[in-house]
Amino acid sequence: MAHILIAEDDLAINELIAKNLRLAGHSFAQVYNGAEAVSAVVDASHSSAPYDLILLDIMMPEMDGFEVIQHIPPTPVIFITAKGRLSDRLCGLNLGADDYIIKPFQMLELLARIEAVLRRTQKNETAFTLNDTEVDLAGRSVHRQGKEVILSPQEFDLLEVLITNKNIALSREKLLDLAWGYDYAGETRTVDTHIQKLRSKLGWEQHIKTLYKLGYRLEVKPPTKQTLNEPSTNAKTKTGTSTTNASTSGGGAVQQ
Figure 1 (tube, rainbow, N blue to C red):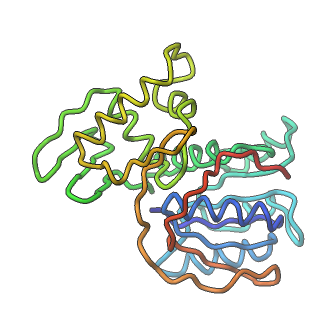
Figure 2: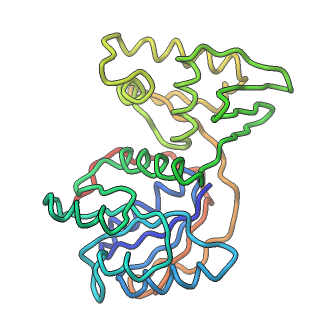
């Protein structure tokens, strides 16, 4: 689980990103202008809980994202913005951003990019435990009740996708894209077959849920922690944590 700052002045987008970070098991804080972002990052850098990643809009009040990144301690940054010109992208990357995503975007794409940055900066978890099953994502091994579970390479790829997107609804088509690759020419029924094998081998019959006419979701109850500060458009910083086991998907496109 990573600790992430959302710096986005559009309240609806800010809340949507927060909702999906919560589903993915990350903790987060929310700010709504550039000055608040700088203050939040600087304050956190002097605490025991600095941010692992900043999701940074560019066109914000008081201070834009390009200015923000120049006034904060070294921290991984993903720009999320409607400024899609090549010159803007080059500017953001040259200022030190780790990634640059243009609105509108798919929430699953954002989550995938977050995981990629966290992997590069070694801030993501490489181990996952559910009930009596332990998954070593880095070592690509699985143990249940202390005994190794043999998975095929494709079964492990599917398992990794489910874990990375835990608590998020994934269609069969999306699972094919993420676990098999865009060039896979087979049918979606192969997803059902592999899901059945994972349920049986891992004992996760109650955790890998079938979603009628859609696909599947790996349900994992997030750790219960207190959520600080109620939502407010005037609040300086809102901190969120994983508190609910929600069932909605973040796969829709996010507009500016």
